[in-house]
Image 1 (tube, one colour):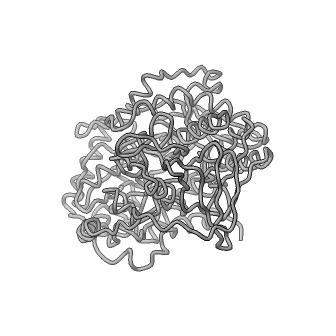
Image 2 (cartoon, one colour):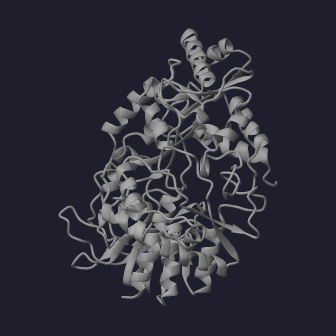
Image 3 (cartoon, helix red, strand yellow):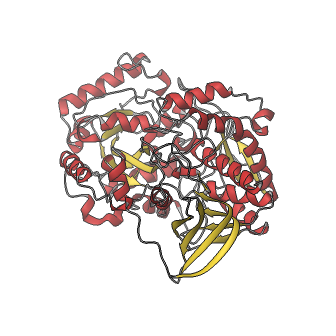
Length: 563
Protein backbone atom coordinates (compact mmCIF):
# COMPACT_ATOMS: atom_id res chain seq x y z
CA UNK A 1 0.00 0.00 0.00
CA UNK A 2 1.30 3.45 -0.89
CA UNK A 3 2.21 6.09 1.68
CA UNK A 4 -0.58 8.61 2.06
CA UNK A 5 -0.90 11.36 4.65
CA UNK A 6 -2.96 9.37 7.14
CA UNK A 7 -0.90 6.18 6.82
CA UNK A 8 2.29 8.19 7.31
CA UNK A 9 0.92 9.91 10.39
CA UNK A 10 -0.31 6.66 11.90
CA UNK A 11 3.14 5.18 11.46
CA UNK A 12 4.72 8.19 13.10
CA UNK A 13 2.33 8.13 16.03
CA UNK A 14 2.79 4.45 16.79
CA UNK A 15 6.52 4.25 16.12
CA UNK A 16 7.05 3.97 19.85
CA UNK A 17 4.10 1.64 20.35
CA UNK A 18 6.17 -1.52 20.00
CA UNK A 19 7.13 -0.97 23.60
CA UNK A 20 3.72 -2.38 24.55
CA UNK A 21 2.49 -1.97 28.08
CA UNK A 22 5.86 -1.66 29.78
CA UNK A 23 6.10 2.00 28.81
CA UNK A 24 2.69 3.13 30.11
CA UNK A 25 2.28 1.69 33.55
CA UNK A 26 3.04 4.43 36.03
CA UNK A 27 2.76 8.19 36.51
CA UNK A 28 5.58 10.62 35.93
CA UNK A 29 6.52 11.02 39.58
CA UNK A 30 7.27 7.35 40.01
CA UNK A 31 9.16 7.37 36.70
CA UNK A 32 11.83 9.64 38.11
CA UNK A 33 12.34 7.40 41.11
CA UNK A 34 12.51 4.29 38.94
CA UNK A 35 14.97 5.89 36.50
CA UNK A 36 17.20 7.29 39.23
CA UNK A 37 17.37 3.88 40.83
CA UNK A 38 18.13 2.26 37.49
CA UNK A 39 20.91 4.78 36.87
CA UNK A 40 22.55 3.96 40.19
CA UNK A 41 22.41 0.22 39.61
CA UNK A 42 23.13 0.23 35.88
CA UNK A 43 25.15 -2.67 34.54
CA UNK A 44 28.14 -1.19 32.72
CA UNK A 45 29.16 -4.42 31.06
CA UNK A 46 29.43 -2.59 27.74
CA UNK A 47 32.77 -1.19 28.93
CA UNK A 48 34.29 -4.67 29.25
CA UNK A 49 36.17 -5.73 26.13
CA UNK A 50 35.00 -9.13 24.86
CA UNK A 51 37.37 -11.87 23.78
CA UNK A 52 39.04 -11.27 20.45
CA UNK A 53 37.67 -13.75 17.89
CA UNK A 54 40.26 -16.30 16.92
CA UNK A 55 38.32 -18.01 14.14
CA UNK A 56 38.99 -15.41 11.45
CA UNK A 57 37.66 -16.87 8.20
CA UNK A 58 39.50 -14.47 5.88
CA UNK A 59 41.51 -11.27 5.75
CA UNK A 60 41.13 -8.38 3.33
CA UNK A 61 43.02 -5.11 2.85
CA UNK A 62 42.27 -1.59 1.75
CA UNK A 63 43.93 1.77 2.06
CA UNK A 64 41.14 3.01 4.31
CA UNK A 65 38.48 1.08 6.24
CA UNK A 66 35.44 3.13 7.25
CA UNK A 67 32.98 1.87 9.85
CA UNK A 68 29.52 3.31 9.24
CA UNK A 69 27.73 4.34 6.03
CA UNK A 70 26.04 7.48 7.30
CA UNK A 71 26.64 11.13 6.49
CA UNK A 72 30.18 11.24 7.86
CA UNK A 73 31.23 7.80 6.59
CA UNK A 74 29.97 8.31 3.07
CA UNK A 75 31.56 11.76 2.87
CA UNK A 76 34.85 10.23 4.02
CA UNK A 77 34.60 7.41 1.50
CA UNK A 78 33.72 9.68 -1.41
CA UNK A 79 36.55 12.15 -0.74
CA UNK A 80 39.10 9.37 -0.22
CA UNK A 81 38.07 7.77 -3.52
CA UNK A 82 38.37 11.16 -5.24
CA UNK A 83 41.97 11.28 -4.00
CA UNK A 84 42.74 7.83 -5.40
CA UNK A 85 42.56 5.68 -2.25
CA UNK A 86 41.05 2.22 -2.04
CA UNK A 87 38.12 2.16 0.38
CA UNK A 88 36.02 -0.47 2.16
CA UNK A 89 32.98 0.72 4.13
CA UNK A 90 31.48 -1.59 6.75
CA UNK A 91 27.78 -1.07 7.50
CA UNK A 92 25.64 -3.10 9.89
CA UNK A 93 22.33 -2.53 8.08
CA UNK A 94 21.23 -3.24 4.54
CA UNK A 95 21.60 0.26 3.10
CA UNK A 96 23.16 3.65 3.70
CA UNK A 97 21.60 5.84 6.38
CA UNK A 98 18.37 7.67 5.55
CA UNK A 99 19.61 11.01 6.79
CA UNK A 100 17.93 14.32 6.07
CA UNK A 101 19.83 16.84 4.01
CA UNK A 102 19.97 19.89 6.26
CA UNK A 103 23.73 20.31 5.96
CA UNK A 104 25.34 23.29 7.66
CA UNK A 105 28.26 25.14 6.13
CA UNK A 106 29.89 28.57 6.25
CA UNK A 107 31.45 30.36 3.24
CA UNK A 108 30.02 28.12 0.55
CA UNK A 109 29.78 29.43 -3.00
CA UNK A 110 25.99 29.31 -2.66
CA UNK A 111 26.21 31.70 0.28
CA UNK A 112 28.59 33.99 -1.60
CA UNK A 113 26.23 34.07 -4.59
CA UNK A 114 23.40 35.03 -2.23
CA UNK A 115 25.50 37.83 -0.70
CA UNK A 116 25.58 36.11 2.69
CA UNK A 117 28.69 36.56 4.80
CA UNK A 118 29.13 34.91 8.19
CA UNK A 119 31.91 35.93 10.51
CA UNK A 120 33.95 32.87 11.51
CA UNK A 121 34.90 34.25 14.90
CA UNK A 122 31.30 35.14 15.69
CA UNK A 123 29.99 31.73 14.63
CA UNK A 124 32.71 29.89 16.55
CA UNK A 125 32.03 31.89 19.68
CA UNK A 126 28.27 31.30 19.43
CA UNK A 127 28.69 27.53 19.18
CA UNK A 128 31.11 27.56 22.12
CA UNK A 129 28.67 29.70 24.14
CA UNK A 130 25.95 27.10 23.58
CA UNK A 131 28.40 24.54 24.94
CA UNK A 132 29.37 26.74 27.91
CA UNK A 133 32.90 26.29 26.53
CA UNK A 134 32.85 22.61 27.45
CA UNK A 135 33.62 22.14 23.78
CA UNK A 136 37.05 22.21 22.16
CA UNK A 137 37.18 25.54 20.35
CA UNK A 138 39.82 24.13 18.01
CA UNK A 139 37.33 21.56 16.73
CA UNK A 140 34.63 24.18 16.32
CA UNK A 141 37.02 26.36 14.33
CA UNK A 142 37.92 23.36 12.22
CA UNK A 143 34.30 23.30 11.08
CA UNK A 144 33.82 27.05 10.64
CA UNK A 145 37.05 27.33 8.65
CA UNK A 146 36.56 24.28 6.42
CA UNK A 147 32.84 23.65 5.97
CA UNK A 148 32.56 25.98 2.98
CA UNK A 149 35.20 24.10 1.03
CA UNK A 150 33.47 20.83 1.90
CA UNK A 151 30.12 22.17 0.69
CA UNK A 152 31.59 23.32 -2.62
CA UNK A 153 33.02 19.82 -3.15
CA UNK A 154 29.72 18.25 -2.08
CA UNK A 155 27.73 20.36 -4.56
CA UNK A 156 29.93 18.98 -7.33
CA UNK A 157 29.36 15.41 -6.16
CA UNK A 158 25.59 15.94 -6.08
CA UNK A 159 25.56 17.59 -9.52
CA UNK A 160 27.37 14.54 -10.89
CA UNK A 161 24.36 12.50 -9.72
CA UNK A 162 21.85 14.90 -11.32
CA UNK A 163 20.96 16.26 -7.88
CA UNK A 164 21.06 19.90 -6.89
CA UNK A 165 21.81 21.85 -3.74
CA UNK A 166 20.04 25.00 -2.53
CA UNK A 167 20.67 27.31 0.40
CA UNK A 168 17.80 27.75 2.86
CA UNK A 169 17.38 31.50 3.30
CA UNK A 170 14.00 31.45 5.09
CA UNK A 171 15.34 32.15 8.56
CA UNK A 172 13.07 32.98 11.47
CA UNK A 173 13.17 36.51 12.84
CA UNK A 174 14.72 35.85 16.22
CA UNK A 175 16.59 37.26 19.17
CA UNK A 176 18.96 34.31 18.69
CA UNK A 177 21.84 33.89 16.27
CA UNK A 178 20.12 32.72 13.10
CA UNK A 179 21.90 32.73 9.75
CA UNK A 180 21.39 31.13 6.35
CA UNK A 181 23.63 28.12 6.94
CA UNK A 182 21.58 25.04 5.99
CA UNK A 183 21.97 23.51 2.53
CA UNK A 184 19.43 21.10 0.99
CA UNK A 185 19.68 18.51 -1.77
CA UNK A 186 16.76 18.22 -4.20
CA UNK A 187 16.05 16.67 -7.56
CA UNK A 188 14.46 18.15 -10.67
CA UNK A 189 13.42 21.79 -10.49
CA UNK A 190 13.45 23.63 -7.18
CA UNK A 191 9.89 23.74 -5.89
CA UNK A 192 9.30 25.47 -2.54
CA UNK A 193 5.98 23.65 -2.05
CA UNK A 194 7.93 20.41 -1.82
CA UNK A 195 6.00 18.43 -4.45
CA UNK A 196 8.37 15.82 -5.83
CA UNK A 197 11.20 16.75 -3.49
CA UNK A 198 12.68 14.94 -0.53
CA UNK A 199 15.24 15.44 2.19
CA UNK A 200 16.75 12.01 1.59
CA UNK A 201 18.27 12.14 -1.90
CA UNK A 202 21.83 12.93 -0.90
CA UNK A 203 22.65 9.63 0.79
CA UNK A 204 21.57 7.57 -2.21
CA UNK A 205 23.49 10.02 -4.39
CA UNK A 206 26.62 9.47 -2.29
CA UNK A 207 26.11 5.71 -2.43
CA UNK A 208 25.94 5.78 -6.25
CA UNK A 209 28.98 8.05 -6.39
CA UNK A 210 31.00 5.73 -4.14
CA UNK A 211 30.02 2.71 -6.22
CA UNK A 212 30.99 4.52 -9.41
CA UNK A 213 34.41 5.38 -8.01
CA UNK A 214 35.15 1.76 -7.13
CA UNK A 215 34.32 1.96 -3.44
CA UNK A 216 33.25 -1.19 -1.66
CA UNK A 217 30.33 -0.89 0.80
CA UNK A 218 29.77 -4.11 2.73
CA UNK A 219 26.20 -4.09 4.01
CA UNK A 220 25.00 -6.35 6.83
CA UNK A 221 28.62 -6.53 7.99
CA UNK A 222 28.86 -4.98 11.45
CA UNK A 223 32.30 -4.17 12.83
CA UNK A 224 32.80 -5.71 16.25
CA UNK A 225 36.37 -4.91 17.30
CA UNK A 226 39.43 -2.90 16.34
CA UNK A 227 42.69 -4.69 15.59
CA UNK A 228 45.80 -3.29 17.32
CA UNK A 229 49.47 -4.17 16.99
CA UNK A 230 52.03 -4.51 19.80
CA UNK A 231 52.27 -0.71 20.13
CA UNK A 232 48.44 -0.40 20.34
CA UNK A 233 48.27 1.24 16.92
CA UNK A 234 45.00 0.39 15.18
CA UNK A 235 45.70 -1.58 12.02
CA UNK A 236 42.27 -2.85 11.07
CA UNK A 237 38.80 -4.00 12.03
CA UNK A 238 37.19 -7.36 12.70
CA UNK A 239 33.66 -7.58 11.31
CA UNK A 240 31.02 -10.28 11.11
CA UNK A 241 29.34 -11.16 7.83
CA UNK A 242 25.67 -11.96 7.42
CA UNK A 243 26.42 -15.70 7.55
CA UNK A 244 28.20 -15.31 10.90
CA UNK A 245 31.81 -15.52 9.72
CA UNK A 246 34.52 -13.22 11.07
CA UNK A 247 36.54 -11.25 8.54
CA UNK A 248 39.52 -9.05 9.36
CA UNK A 249 39.83 -5.87 7.29
CA UNK A 250 43.34 -4.43 7.46
CA UNK A 251 43.84 -0.73 6.70
CA UNK A 252 47.09 0.42 5.15
CA UNK A 253 46.45 4.12 5.85
CA UNK A 254 43.86 4.26 8.59
CA UNK A 255 40.49 3.33 10.05
CA UNK A 256 37.63 5.85 10.34
CA UNK A 257 34.92 5.27 12.98
CA UNK A 258 31.51 6.92 12.46
CA UNK A 259 28.70 4.65 13.65
CA UNK A 260 26.21 7.31 14.79
CA UNK A 261 26.65 7.32 18.55
CA UNK A 262 24.68 5.34 21.13
CA UNK A 263 21.21 6.87 21.05
CA UNK A 264 19.54 3.46 20.89
CA UNK A 265 21.64 1.70 23.52
CA UNK A 266 19.73 1.76 26.79
CA UNK A 267 22.65 0.51 28.86
CA UNK A 268 25.00 3.21 27.58
CA UNK A 269 22.40 5.97 27.90
CA UNK A 270 21.69 5.04 31.51
CA UNK A 271 25.40 4.78 32.26
CA UNK A 272 26.51 8.01 30.63
CA UNK A 273 23.67 10.53 30.26
CA UNK A 274 21.39 12.26 32.74
CA UNK A 275 18.16 13.35 31.08
CA UNK A 276 17.10 12.09 27.68
CA UNK A 277 16.46 8.43 28.47
CA UNK A 278 14.61 9.41 31.66
CA UNK A 279 12.47 12.29 30.39
CA UNK A 280 11.71 11.43 26.76
CA UNK A 281 8.64 9.67 25.41
CA UNK A 282 10.05 8.86 21.98
CA UNK A 283 13.33 7.91 20.33
CA UNK A 284 13.51 8.76 16.65
CA UNK A 285 17.21 7.95 16.30
CA UNK A 286 18.20 5.32 13.74
CA UNK A 287 17.90 1.81 15.12
CA UNK A 288 21.52 1.18 14.17
CA UNK A 289 22.87 3.79 16.62
CA UNK A 290 23.74 1.26 19.28
CA UNK A 291 27.14 2.58 20.30
CA UNK A 292 29.27 0.12 18.35
CA UNK A 293 31.96 2.63 17.44
CA UNK A 294 32.17 4.15 20.91
CA UNK A 295 32.44 0.70 22.50
CA UNK A 296 35.20 -0.43 20.17
CA UNK A 297 37.19 2.73 20.82
CA UNK A 298 36.81 2.42 24.60
CA UNK A 299 38.01 -1.18 24.37
CA UNK A 300 41.02 0.10 22.40
CA UNK A 301 41.90 2.50 25.24
CA UNK A 302 40.19 5.72 24.13
CA UNK A 303 38.88 8.24 26.64
CA UNK A 304 35.19 8.99 26.92
CA UNK A 305 34.63 12.73 26.88
CA UNK A 306 33.63 14.00 30.35
CA UNK A 307 30.39 15.49 28.95
CA UNK A 308 27.95 12.93 27.59
CA UNK A 309 24.48 14.12 26.65
CA UNK A 310 21.85 13.87 23.95
CA UNK A 311 20.15 15.93 21.28
CA UNK A 312 16.50 16.25 22.30
CA UNK A 313 13.64 17.89 20.45
CA UNK A 314 10.39 19.00 22.06
CA UNK A 315 7.89 17.15 19.88
CA UNK A 316 7.37 13.90 21.73
CA UNK A 317 3.86 13.11 22.96
CA UNK A 318 2.48 10.82 25.64
CA UNK A 319 -0.76 10.04 27.42
CA UNK A 320 -0.79 11.65 30.88
CA UNK A 321 -0.40 8.26 32.55
CA UNK A 322 2.57 7.15 30.43
CA UNK A 323 6.04 6.44 31.81
CA UNK A 324 9.08 8.42 30.71
CA UNK A 325 11.80 5.84 30.24
CA UNK A 326 12.96 2.95 28.13
CA UNK A 327 11.17 1.44 26.41
CA UNK A 328 9.61 4.63 25.02
CA UNK A 329 5.86 4.50 24.53
CA UNK A 330 4.93 7.88 23.11
CA UNK A 331 4.54 9.38 19.66
CA UNK A 332 5.22 12.69 17.99
CA UNK A 333 3.37 15.94 17.41
CA UNK A 334 4.87 17.79 14.48
CA UNK A 335 3.64 21.14 15.78
CA UNK A 336 5.30 20.65 19.16
CA UNK A 337 7.95 23.35 18.68
CA UNK A 338 5.47 26.09 17.79
CA UNK A 339 5.66 28.82 20.48
CA UNK A 340 2.14 28.38 21.84
CA UNK A 341 1.35 28.75 25.53
CA UNK A 342 2.95 25.97 27.58
CA UNK A 343 1.88 25.11 31.09
CA UNK A 344 3.25 22.65 33.63
CA UNK A 345 1.17 19.97 35.34
CA UNK A 346 -0.03 22.56 37.83
CA UNK A 347 -1.59 24.60 35.02
CA UNK A 348 0.98 27.42 35.30
CA UNK A 349 2.96 29.15 32.59
CA UNK A 350 6.65 28.89 33.51
CA UNK A 351 8.84 30.46 30.77
CA UNK A 352 9.18 32.21 27.40
CA UNK A 353 8.06 29.53 24.94
CA UNK A 354 10.02 30.98 22.00
CA UNK A 355 13.13 28.86 22.56
CA UNK A 356 15.24 26.31 20.74
CA UNK A 357 14.16 22.68 20.92
CA UNK A 358 16.61 21.61 23.61
CA UNK A 359 15.88 24.66 25.74
CA UNK A 360 12.12 24.03 25.55
CA UNK A 361 12.77 20.48 26.74
CA UNK A 362 15.19 21.53 29.48
CA UNK A 363 12.79 24.11 30.90
CA UNK A 364 10.10 21.45 31.24
CA UNK A 365 12.43 18.85 32.75
CA UNK A 366 12.91 21.23 35.67
CA UNK A 367 9.12 21.29 36.25
CA UNK A 368 7.09 18.79 38.32
CA UNK A 369 6.48 15.66 36.28
CA UNK A 370 9.06 16.73 33.67
CA UNK A 371 6.41 17.14 30.94
CA UNK A 372 4.26 20.00 29.71
CA UNK A 373 1.00 20.89 28.02
CA UNK A 374 0.98 22.93 24.82
CA UNK A 375 -2.28 24.92 24.57
CA UNK A 376 -3.99 26.62 21.60
CA UNK A 377 -7.38 27.20 19.99
CA UNK A 378 -9.05 26.50 16.65
CA UNK A 379 -6.96 29.16 14.88
CA UNK A 380 -3.69 27.37 15.56
CA UNK A 381 -2.67 26.98 11.91
CA UNK A 382 -3.03 30.68 11.11
CA UNK A 383 -0.93 31.27 14.23
CA UNK A 384 1.71 28.89 12.85
CA UNK A 385 1.76 30.83 9.59
CA UNK A 386 2.40 34.01 11.55
CA UNK A 387 5.02 32.40 13.83
CA UNK A 388 7.15 31.48 10.80
CA UNK A 389 9.40 29.05 12.62
CA UNK A 390 12.31 27.76 10.62
CA UNK A 391 13.94 24.56 9.44
CA UNK A 392 12.54 21.31 10.82
CA UNK A 393 10.01 23.02 13.10
CA UNK A 394 8.42 24.74 10.10
CA UNK A 395 4.80 23.79 9.43
CA UNK A 396 3.77 26.65 7.12
CA UNK A 397 5.37 27.93 3.93
CA UNK A 398 7.77 30.81 4.55
CA UNK A 399 6.71 34.32 3.70
CA UNK A 400 10.08 35.05 2.15
CA UNK A 401 13.26 33.17 1.37
CA UNK A 402 13.97 29.69 0.06
CA UNK A 403 13.00 26.49 1.84
CA UNK A 404 11.71 23.05 0.90
CA UNK A 405 8.27 22.24 2.31
CA UNK A 406 8.11 18.47 2.67
CA UNK A 407 7.19 16.22 5.55
CA UNK A 408 9.41 15.20 8.40
CA UNK A 409 9.56 11.45 7.92
CA UNK A 410 8.51 10.13 4.53
CA UNK A 411 10.01 12.89 2.39
CA UNK A 412 6.89 12.98 0.19
CA UNK A 413 3.88 14.20 2.13
CA UNK A 414 3.35 17.92 1.75
CA UNK A 415 3.15 20.01 4.90
CA UNK A 416 -0.03 22.06 4.96
CA UNK A 417 -3.04 22.82 7.15
CA UNK A 418 -4.72 19.51 6.33
CA UNK A 419 -1.57 17.56 7.18
CA UNK A 420 -1.27 19.25 10.56
CA UNK A 421 -4.97 18.77 11.35
CA UNK A 422 -4.65 15.07 10.56
CA UNK A 423 -1.64 14.92 12.86
CA UNK A 424 -3.50 16.71 15.65
CA UNK A 425 -6.59 14.54 15.29
CA UNK A 426 -4.50 11.41 15.64
CA UNK A 427 -2.65 12.73 18.68
CA UNK A 428 -6.07 13.38 20.27
CA UNK A 429 -7.18 9.86 19.36
CA UNK A 430 -4.00 8.44 20.91
CA UNK A 431 -4.88 10.07 24.23
CA UNK A 432 -1.81 12.30 24.19
CA UNK A 433 -3.92 15.41 23.48
CA UNK A 434 -7.34 16.63 24.55
CA UNK A 435 -9.97 18.70 22.75
CA UNK A 436 -12.76 20.67 24.40
CA UNK A 437 -15.39 23.30 23.72
CA UNK A 438 -14.55 25.36 26.79
CA UNK A 439 -11.52 26.16 28.95
CA UNK A 440 -13.27 24.54 31.94
CA UNK A 441 -13.72 21.32 30.01
CA UNK A 442 -10.15 21.49 28.73
CA UNK A 443 -8.78 21.83 32.27
CA UNK A 444 -10.84 18.86 33.38
CA UNK A 445 -9.56 16.68 30.55
CA UNK A 446 -5.98 17.80 31.23
CA UNK A 447 -6.44 17.00 34.93
CA UNK A 448 -4.82 20.28 35.99
CA UNK A 449 -6.14 22.65 38.69
CA UNK A 450 -9.03 24.39 36.95
CA UNK A 451 -8.83 27.79 38.65
CA UNK A 452 -5.09 28.06 38.13
CA UNK A 453 -5.31 27.04 34.49
CA UNK A 454 -8.19 29.42 33.73
CA UNK A 455 -6.23 32.26 35.33
CA UNK A 456 -3.18 31.33 33.22
CA UNK A 457 -5.19 31.33 29.99
CA UNK A 458 -6.94 34.61 30.84
CA UNK A 459 -3.60 36.22 31.57
CA UNK A 460 -2.13 34.93 28.30
CA UNK A 461 -5.08 36.40 26.39
CA UNK A 462 -4.49 39.73 28.12
CA UNK A 463 -0.87 39.67 26.97
CA UNK A 464 -2.00 38.88 23.43
CA UNK A 465 -4.49 41.74 23.43
CA UNK A 466 -1.84 44.13 24.75
CA UNK A 467 0.72 42.73 22.26
CA UNK A 468 3.29 42.73 25.02
CA UNK A 469 4.49 39.81 27.13
CA UNK A 470 5.09 41.55 30.44
CA UNK A 471 5.59 38.23 32.22
CA UNK A 472 8.35 36.54 30.20
CA UNK A 473 9.26 38.92 27.37
CA UNK A 474 8.22 36.77 24.42
CA UNK A 475 8.10 38.70 21.15
CA UNK A 476 4.60 39.94 20.27
CA UNK A 477 4.73 38.02 16.98
CA UNK A 478 5.01 34.77 18.95
CA UNK A 479 1.96 35.41 21.14
CA UNK A 480 -1.46 33.98 20.28
CA UNK A 481 -5.06 34.12 21.46
CA UNK A 482 -6.83 31.20 23.16
CA UNK A 483 -10.39 32.43 22.71
CA UNK A 484 -12.24 30.39 20.04
CA UNK A 485 -13.18 26.75 20.51
CA UNK A 486 -12.50 24.03 20.00
CA UNK A 487 -9.54 24.29 22.34
CA UNK A 488 -6.60 21.87 22.35
CA UNK A 489 -3.90 20.80 24.77
CA UNK A 490 -1.14 18.40 23.77
CA UNK A 491 0.74 16.52 26.49
CA UNK A 492 4.38 16.73 25.40
CA UNK A 493 7.75 15.31 26.39
CA UNK A 494 11.21 15.00 24.92
CA UNK A 495 12.00 13.37 21.59
CA UNK A 496 15.49 11.82 21.60
CA UNK A 497 17.41 12.12 18.34
CA UNK A 498 21.03 11.17 18.98
CA UNK A 499 23.92 11.44 21.40
CA UNK A 500 26.18 14.49 21.56
CA UNK A 501 28.95 12.85 23.57
CA UNK A 502 31.35 10.09 22.62
CA UNK A 503 35.11 9.82 22.35
CA UNK A 504 37.59 12.62 23.05
CA UNK A 505 39.71 13.46 20.01
CA UNK A 506 42.58 15.76 19.20
CA UNK A 507 42.54 18.43 16.51
CA UNK A 508 43.50 15.76 13.94
CA UNK A 509 40.35 13.77 14.87
CA UNK A 510 42.37 10.95 16.41
CA UNK A 511 41.12 9.47 19.72
CA UNK A 512 43.08 10.23 22.85
CA UNK A 513 43.69 8.21 25.99
CA UNK A 514 43.16 9.37 29.57
CA UNK A 515 46.82 10.47 29.73
CA UNK A 516 46.39 12.63 26.61
CA UNK A 517 48.37 10.37 24.30
CA UNK A 518 46.98 9.55 20.85
CA UNK A 519 45.82 6.16 19.61
CA UNK A 520 47.39 5.91 16.19
CA UNK A 521 45.80 4.51 13.06
CA UNK A 522 42.18 5.40 13.83
CA UNK A 523 40.04 8.55 13.49
CA UNK A 524 36.62 9.46 14.84
CA UNK A 525 33.94 11.56 13.14
CA UNK A 526 30.17 11.99 13.30
CA UNK A 527 28.24 11.28 16.50
CA UNK A 528 30.95 8.97 17.84
CA UNK A 529 33.15 12.05 18.23
CA UNK A 530 32.81 14.33 21.27
CA UNK A 531 34.15 17.78 22.05
CA UNK A 532 31.94 19.86 19.77
CA UNK A 533 28.86 20.26 21.97
CA UNK A 534 28.01 19.90 25.63
CA UNK A 535 24.47 19.39 26.92
CA UNK A 536 22.48 20.99 24.08
CA UNK A 537 22.56 21.16 20.31
CA UNK A 538 22.66 24.72 18.90
CA UNK A 539 19.60 24.44 16.65
CA UNK A 540 19.98 28.03 15.50
CA UNK A 541 22.76 26.69 13.24
CA UNK A 542 20.67 24.83 10.69
CA UNK A 543 22.17 21.46 9.81
CA UNK A 544 25.19 21.88 12.07
CA UNK A 545 25.41 18.24 13.14
CA UNK A 546 25.18 16.90 9.59
CA UNK A 547 27.55 19.62 8.42
CA UNK A 548 30.07 18.92 11.16
CA UNK A 549 30.11 15.17 10.54
CA UNK A 550 30.32 15.50 6.76
CA UNK A 551 32.96 18.24 6.83
CA UNK A 552 35.20 16.23 9.13
CA UNK A 553 34.49 13.04 7.16
CA UNK A 554 35.45 14.79 3.94
CA UNK A 555 38.63 16.18 5.49
CA UNK A 556 39.84 12.93 7.05
CA UNK A 557 39.09 10.92 3.90
CA UNK A 558 41.17 13.30 1.81
CA UNK A 559 44.00 13.49 4.37
CA UNK A 560 44.29 9.71 4.77
CA UNK A 561 44.30 9.21 1.02
CA UNK A 562 47.28 11.57 0.75
CA UNK A 563 49.40 9.56 3.25
